[in-house]
Length: 252
Image 1 (cartoon, rainbow, N blue to C red):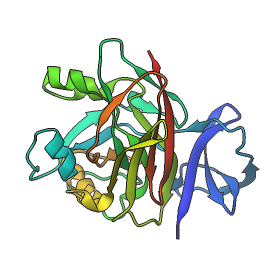
Image 2: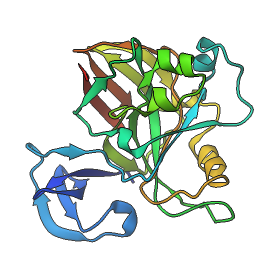
Image 3: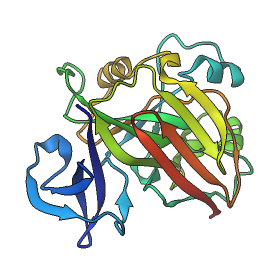
């Protein structure tokens, strides 16, 4: 059964809710913490939405679609290629991506993201560690990526990890349509069946390296068709069964 969870500001503090039959029901804690319903329903017409995760780290996989590896001039990787985004790169749904002053080429990258639901790491049982899925945009300063020869600066700017709007579970993402639209025009389109390494493989691989904590985020890679964003653009990531994540692009 599909379940949908959202995070938002409630009485000035972050809170979690569950969507149920058109209502937003307040939860006592994060959804992976076995929360209780508080009995309060929240009207969502004026809610300030927050990214549906509470990460200590954001782990990303590069070159995980064959067409994207080809457009970047790389061979198909034999194992997941990992890099990290800082948790401070996280951006809430509807908030603005800020273009850095020292970059002339900032790209969109539509991605399926996983959220971890329990502590897991080397030597630990990683069964059921994957809690759910959401949409992400792995925003990248492409010119700085090429200049630096590694990805930390290019991927790590504040606002460079839009995430949301909902955290969903009970959905089949084995062959979901994934798109990126800029100003309403589709610029990326693929299916998650084209992933080289699937979500559970990625989680197992990462958990053999580092300890993951509840609320941590893993991005699974972007399909081909990457391209630049400019101030004033509206960029949207759509994933079938998961949701649609929209953000405006502005100058920093």
